[in-house]
Image 1 (cartoon, helix red, strand yellow):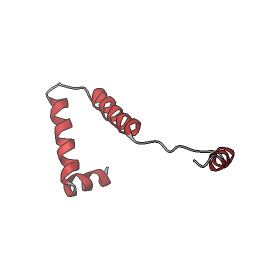
Image 2 (tube, one colour; image 1 turned 90 degrees about the vertical axis):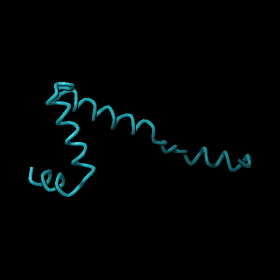
Image 3 (cartoon, helix red, strand yellow; image 1 turned 90 degrees about the horizontal axis):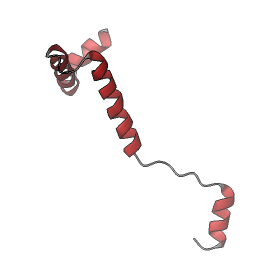
Image 4 (cartoon, helix red, strand yellow; image 1 turned 30 degrees about the horizontal axis):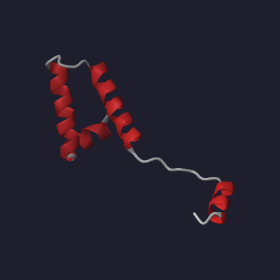
Length: 69
């Protein structure tokens, strides 16, 4: 917990996000579980939006070179 406290006081963006989440929970807009789900879903959306590395086998590379591609 000490590291999170330090980060809260030293990182303005982190503290703003924490304060927003605390207010949503206190106002009963979201439950703690819904906050966790939302954070996980946001992370999943970002991962899915990232371009994926395309792996090409050595055989396919060889065939593409043969065809001048």
